[in-house]
Length: 104
Image 1: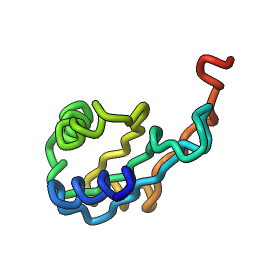
Image 2 (image 1 turned 135 degrees about the horizontal axis):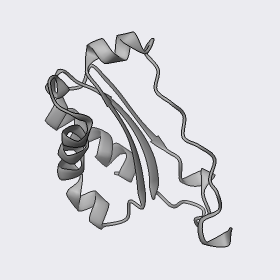
Image 3 (image 1 turned 90 degrees about the horizontal axis):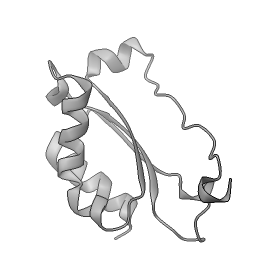
Image 4 (image 1 turned 30 degrees about the horizontal axis):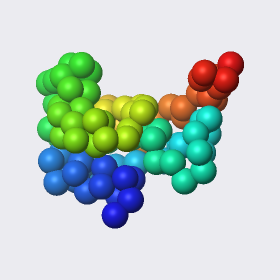
């Protein structure tokens, strides 16, 4: 199973999301071809109701602790309740372009 699929499966199991996007953005960074190291996650779940952003991100990081220790270099998180998602028109910000990391 790919890292992208593993992330999606674990998040579905834990958060029962109304909406989930897991985008592998590794190709946008200075990494070898085929790397699965940079991801953008949009996670919309009722379980985030009443929780501040930091608590939401810690919950996601906890669920993905094994993956974060074993290869994920970057994880952009957009965590929302369904009401917040609808207020934003069902969208989340795109990731900024890579600055080149150590090659800059």
